[in-house]
Length: 486
Ligand SMILES: Cc1cc2nc3c(=O)[nH]c(=O)nc-3n(C[C@H](O)[C@H](O)[C@H](O)COP(=O)(O)OP(=O)(O)OC[C@H]3O[C@@H](n4cnc5c(N)ncnc54)[C@H](O)[C@@H]3O)c2cc1C
Image (spheres, rainbow, N blue to C red):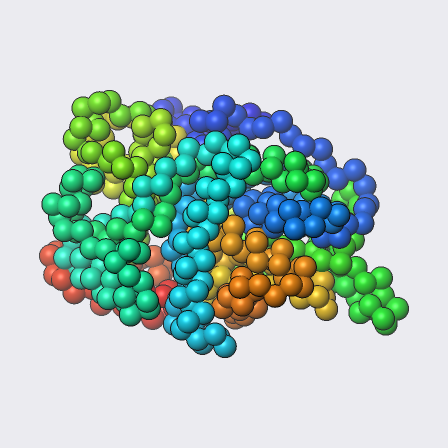
């Protein structure tokens, strides 16, 4: 497979799939690593070579170069969401502050998680500089824009909540319409929240560079090696057992005191995990490079990441090669936790995102949509992420970042490495450590629920274009059903 391995939809000339545009932009996929050569024993086995698995391996080896760390990847490093995302290295907290605050650390621990996520933006930038990873990082911050009075009201409520939870003017501040337009001109932009704790990245460049840094640190990565089953250590050590957990593959098993699952949106495909994390779909399009007149009209010289406050929200970045990459929900969920085929997305999703792009940035009307793709991210039933490692079973996992995983996976991976080492740190005291969530409903309830929810949210967004400053009652019903934190 090369980076051109996507569908070319002749009617629209949109390159669709090929995993993502980011791979094409970096000149194709890197050379494939070998598969697992046969059964082996390791100190730590990691399943999945996205940001979570790779950062975990990186910090494990940096902390203890004597450890044998083996990463098993079904396709290739960065094949999943880590090589397809919107490139927001954002400190947005993945989940509900109120739910995390129910843990023993209370509200103070939630603020600590928020602060550590902010530090993570610096940490990823630091490692990239130290390891010579060119990931097109631009530290422009993040703009959450309101384009309807109802969105504007929600922005103000969000700001008040941020202050209540301890965030200051240095963390997030309100911009009026004129100030927003001084940064980015967005049709109907009424105001925005600005946070400096975000950077734009090129995901495929970041994940490729990170995989190489992991290998330089001494970990082994085996590609085209799907794990078919993860088995806890059994019977327990001391009761006649080997003391090792197992990751099973067709090439043989890897045994290790710890097997860590880092499969986020793909988790449901592993035996016994079908209802743990819902694979939520997200779709993206990217324009051809805009001309100088286009950028004169839009501005955006600060390279902020830009999102809106719709219930079915959009997220966008100005790429290093002067395109606009914009994403949104598309078809939210495939029956029975299905995933896409190498990123090929539905034509309806391309049309919807194109409509949003042209409405928000009219200067893009003449710009060709160059490439479209999609991917899955992991959503837990309570929309709160988890980082867990259990020495008794030898199993650990991290994920469920609900679409905010680029920075969070760095912190989660670092934390998993600490948990495996058994050394208490500030990270191991964070409220997402050991967080448990109930399972998703069985099918067909799961499919009907998610599709019903997004029908409600779409209707709510449409109703809110009517000009009322009140959040649509349809969205409130949706929030109640889904448990999505606001
Ligand atoms: C279109 C899109 C846009 C997004 N935009 C953003 C954004 O702008 N900012 C943000 O913070 N987050 C964003 N996210 C979410 C973010 O990308 C993810 O949360 C994050 O990349 C998850 O990393 P991960 O390593 O946990 O999972 P993944 O990157 O999905 O990696 C999991 C890996 O596990 C492998 N795997 C799966 N099953 C097995 C198995 N059985 N055996 C071996 N290997 C296996 C997969 O092939 C894959 O490579 C977006 C997601 C998508 C899909």
